[in-house]
Length: 127
Image 1 (cartoon, rainbow, N blue to C red):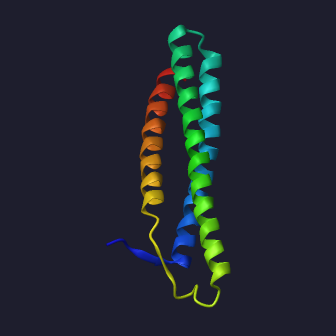
Image 2 (spheres, helix red, strand yellow):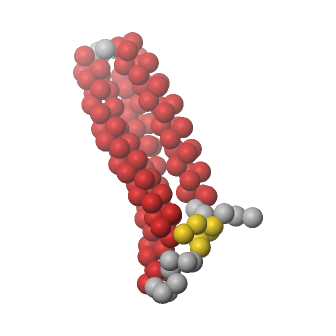
Image 3 (cartoon, rainbow, N blue to C red):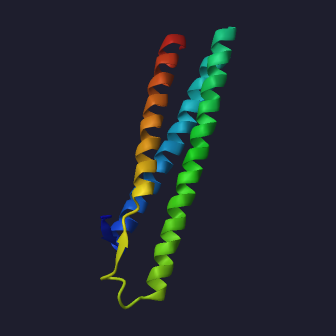
């Protein structure tokens, strides 16, 4: 049986996830600057190739952040519509937990952590 939550619980999770995604987006900018710094200082083919690899990974992560943000905002719009449609009972109504979104965030965070660790290894070797 799936867990049910109040609109307020779901909304709080949405806010938390969107804030996390903004943090990761900022972190991607920092990573991008570090990659550029290393690529500028080192002109070897190996460094260029690795820098390109990491730039591509950052692009993928940016796209994932955009997709996750869109999905969360769409679910938030669904909850808002439910509140408008039934304002008198919204405080007592329970919604299915957004398990898919939670799993997507967990998966994203794991991949992001792995990328960060790979990038730190690269930067420590070439800075």
